[in-house]
Length: 60
Image 1 (cartoon, rainbow, N blue to C red):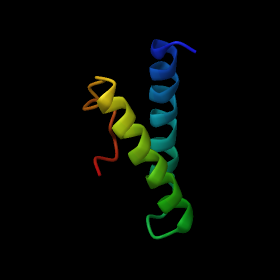
Image 2: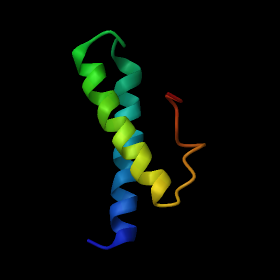
Image 3: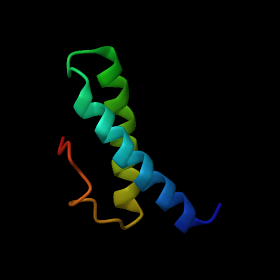
């Protein structure tokens, strides 16, 4: 997988994950697990030079 493909897949996952996070209660273990992945993806995308300002619906 090329770097561009990896970034594309990560953007798609980041967007999809945020949709799920908005649907569940914040005080659940499911949300905490999703938030961990959200942070991982956010860091990866930022390091890759992606401006996630418009993509980030959670803003945590």
